[in-house]
Length: 396
Image (cartoon, rainbow, N blue to C red; front, side, top):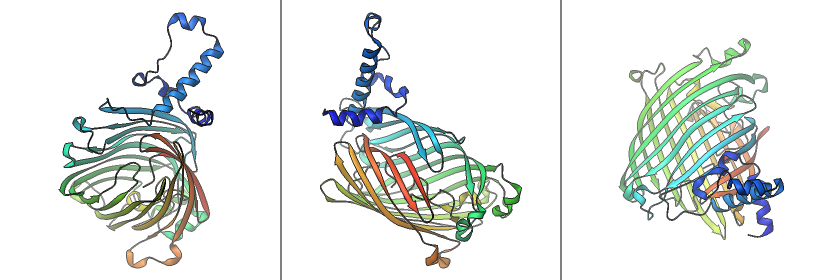
């Protein structure tokens, strides 16, 4: 490995939590023998530790062909406009169902986060491909507490800076979708989602922004999803299409205080345009109808596709967004991304207005942590605000 490459890996490694450095599967031991430790000077120990760190990250993106389950650990400090300075830890794994390496690998991620503003998060998510690719199972379970902000409902309230108020949001979410193969790359199946959310510590003078709604909501969805998926990877696609439509219902007989329905769609394409260059495009939308609680309204921003906006600032029953992103491999495990696009919200499809379109653009850095799993640093710019995001996997 060239000296310059070693320096880049070392810089990244110094941002990593030491909990990831003692993974026995990669041959990294907590300590050497007692005899060696006695004769080793402090500087030798330090150099040896750095070599081990570099060696560990040198190997994380190399597939372990003899292993049915390939797992690596990453973590360290990060900063975003929403959560401020924090410490995140993550275990990411690729595996093959029944050891069938002819299939696209399944993936699972166990993640946690803690920040200086009091934000904490723990969760697990993944995409499981059953043998033969006849059945797919997507899942996500997370729990978090977040001192966040609220501007009210609708575009006008979101634009009004004087509406900005702080509150604490506690959330627990569980979602699961099971897909059965109907034809080549075409899947259909049932899905369900459970969500418990609670807002607290709100300044009484701003309670009117919640339109006298309950601050605590419990929502249970049932429904179905259909998708056409030819992507060559779930986590870092270089080619293919993802076309999906989801229809979910939240009826009263499932315990919902407010009954409503939701229809959402995704149309994404990934195409190689030149050596190392991938153009990724996505058009996404969510349409809620019925008596929708404030916690279930459509929104955008944060680390999602439309980066540059505070997540939850703009929310309403209907939301549409579109992004075009160029992802360019630069050198070894390093790459960059440049994107532009827009999003809009409205109380209904007929009430979309051109003045409510919110543009965004940005630039990001990519580092291949594992094969087809990238660590990303994104700087997004929106209308009147900007954000910085550290995350794993692409935004879409």
